[in-house]
Image (cartoon, rainbow, N blue to C red; front, top):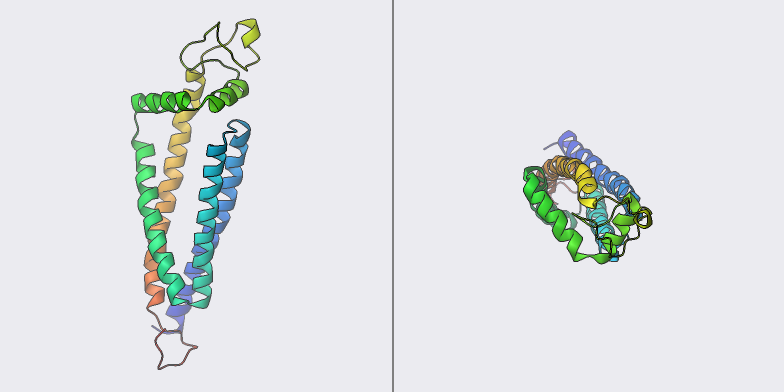
Length: 201
């Protein structure tokens, strides 16, 4: 490959990783809007942890592309391929899930975290999942007036849209990740025209 091919691969890989860095920042800023709804430490910590991991993966790819660093590019390619497998699987599951499975998953998630229940009840002004217990406790403003509705219907209104959105975005990025793996493999095996012609980088 000549200089044009090397430069094209380098610029394409750099642009792809800049897209990943910007996407991670903006998508996780959007997730921060949900922190007022769900203040569970595990949920918040999980979202932040995934965001930081993906940010460093994209940063490693960007640095490896700019410096044509063989070792960094190799590990970036392996990690990106594993991220592709996980993200493609999760995205496909989000798009394929039916109404009954969705209801079951929502109920399991509801029953597993009392703190999440309180956050949701208070935020969307509802009590209980499928029925309101007048003798129970609830942080919703409607509870003292006995005018609360169950949360299942309100959550269900948004859950389908969220799953389709997450699945669609994830599927889009999973295809860009497999493109990134191919670009990295191609770029790693090209000679840097500015380097010693007898050295294969």
